[in-house]
Amino acid sequence: MKKLLLPLLLSLMVGSAYGGVYKWVDSKGEVHYGDQPPPSNKTQKLNIDTPAPSASSAADTKASPAKTMNDKEVDFRKRRVEAAEAQKKQDQAAIESKQKQENCNNARGNVRSLQEGGRVVKFDDKGERVYLDDAARQKSLENAKKAVEDWCK
Image (cartoon, rainbow, N blue to C red; front, side):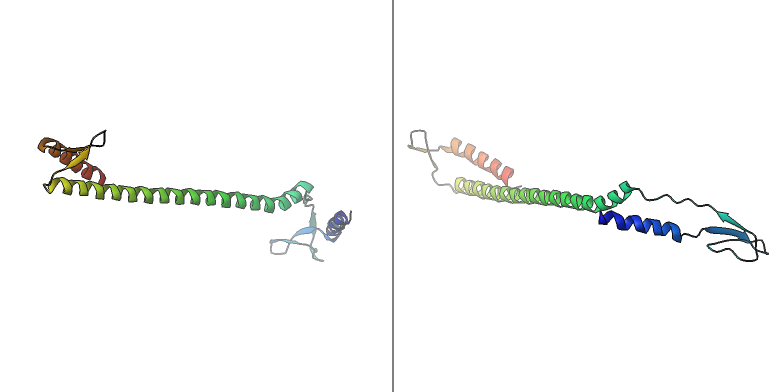
């Protein structure tokens, strides 16, 4: 109740302190406005209606800072989520780049092994050693070179 009493009294005092606005024309023909009329000139009192502030506009001004804080909080959380997603993408790209480099190194190693000219051994499905003949070795070398082209771009 006390919170409502002070604004009410202040609004009543503002109305009584308002003296009015006067308009007059001086001897040179210039129009003047003022809160007190001059004693010698003919004046015209202007009736200026100023609307009283509504209760809803006062409530809106109090609610708007809270709204902006909520907006700021939402924006902050959104930026934080976007930053986390960007970091995750960056980490994933680094992992993929490292994996690609390892595959490139392995493919180059396979090409070197096949080009050195020694006997090449592979294991079959039973786990037994199988030596590659020249045709199979050439095909493996071509596959290894293709892998180098794919991984070492």
